[in-house]
Each structure stands twice: as structure tokens, then as C-alpha cells.
Image (cartoon, rainbow, N blue to C red; front, side, top):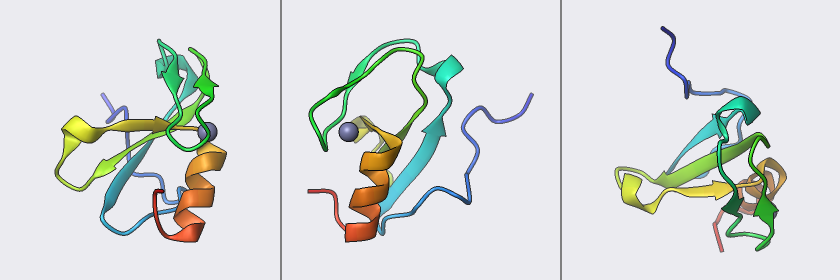
Length: 76
Ligand SMILES: [Zn+2]
């Protein structure tokens, strides 16, 4: 069985963070995006990111919000 959260080379990276894509079919509940404060509905593909080695600080992001943060080079 393949890793359900493989490294995605098209995902923008942010130094110090691990990021994985969450496909819509795996998004079983709604989350609040820390960047824009808006809901990420259940069933909506998005990304999950956390500081390297600190999985307890996993946060779910809209893909576009993550792209903006990664381009800016920081989370907040
Ligand atoms: Zn967002």
C-alpha cells in the first residue's frame, strides 16, 4: 500500500517545516486554516504542515494559503 501522504515535489517548501498534501478523499473533517481563518471543509483537498519533528503542531492549510506563506518564506 502506498504511503498516503507522499512527498509532493510540486508543493512549495518552507524552511524548517514538513508539509504534505491531504487529498479531498482523506479530508474527513473540517479544519480552520491558520493563515486566513476560514474553514477548510471536509472533503476539500488541502495541505498539512508542521515544524520539522514537532508533529503535535500540525496545522491544516488551504493550498493557496500555504503557497503564499511559502513564497513569503514564513508562516505568520
Ligand atoms: Zn486559508
